[in-house]
Length: 156
Image 1 (cartoon, helix red, strand yellow):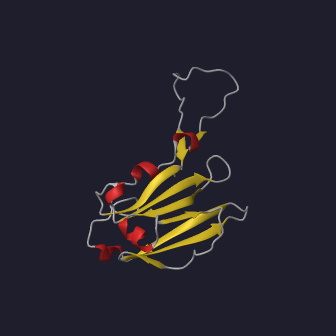
Image 2 (image 1 turned 120 degrees about the vertical axis):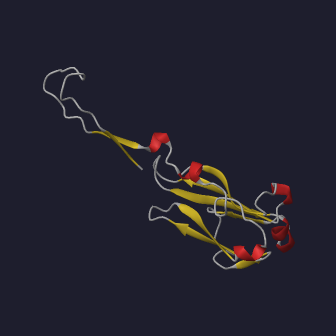
Image 3 (image 1 turned 90 degrees about the vertical axis):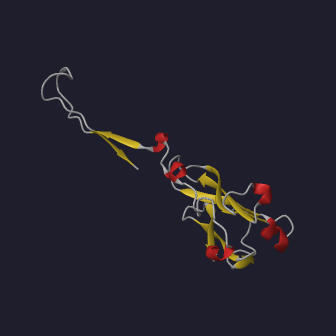
């Protein structure tokens, strides 16, 4: 739910970017109105396993054509797939798939691994909708008077 760059996978879990065997980072963007759904619009696959397959690793952008996407490819001991998609309104995005993470022999970090994702899965405060259940009154009355009750609900 949080826009920005996020590490989806990191093998081994505690590795720095320059020493990772595999690192997948994605740019999550809000497409459409301010608080509509989040989509991946860029995907970077790096690390020594990716560099062994392709110099500089792999880079996918939603705005670039789907050439080479939609097919599984091996990076080290895992399988990866990136698929281009678009909404009914025409907004372009990327889907990311991974398989065989258990074959790496390492703990896997990132949002799709064992790292904590609670901070990026919360709806930002400016996107929460609030509704007051207070009954409108015809004449002014102090909120401290008996019988006055207010409830506020937050919707995610």
